[in-house]
Amino acid sequence: MRELRVEGTSYPLLRHLTPPVVAVTTVAGERTNGMIVNSAQRASLVPSVPRISVYILKPHVTHEMIMESGVFAVHLLRNDQWDVIWQLGLRSARDVPNKLDGLELHTGVTGCPLLKDCMASFECRVINAMDAGAATFFLADIVKDHPGTDGEPMTSPYFRQNMPPDRVRAYESNLAHAMEYLEPLSRSIDAVGWKGPRNRSE
Ligand SMILES: Cc1cc2nc3c(=O)[nH]c(=O)nc-3n(C[C@H](O)[C@H](O)[C@H](O)COP(=O)(O)O)c2cc1C
Image (cartoon, rainbow, N blue to C red; front, side, top):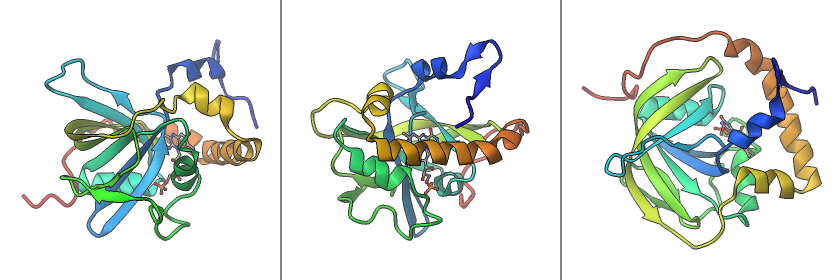
């Protein structure tokens, strides 16, 4: 894989800034979907106004669906939940009819499908969005949280250090392929904020 470099910096050092590996689910009309992100961050220091931000690439089906409905759920995964990561993070809903098949789910107050097995899930409603060229940063209020199991969270360092070799190949090849078409998109920013979900009735 081509080494990615930021001028004056070794790109791998940026991995120290990476949040844990979590599952994001969403709903739009009749469709439900899920994906994996390592870009979900606490986005408020005020406990009474809890917020999360996520960075989601535009080609992903989940991106299109969050744009449409304005809701998503973030799930903290334990570090033994590899199967969920492979199921949601290596294949797009463009290629698999229902990515959530086989996972135990319940429906949240936002309508999002929620994984029953996780350390916690946070249902979110988008309040702002920032275009990042190839992706969108969604800033969202946590509207409901659901406690789950005990365990150790799937941190990004743990994920990188313990990924089986055959999965490393699939993951790195997905990344390399994505970089080719994302690089040109990354330079074109539309400095417009969130106007609400596309399916909002008012
Ligand atoms: C460990 C890991 C971290 C990922 N982090 C992100 C991320 O932060 N943002 C993103 O857009 N995609 C990320 N992805 C890629 C998506 O999860 C993946 O491409 C997914 O198949 C998209 O699904 P969709 O097209 O059905 O929405 C990550 C994948 C893995 C395995």
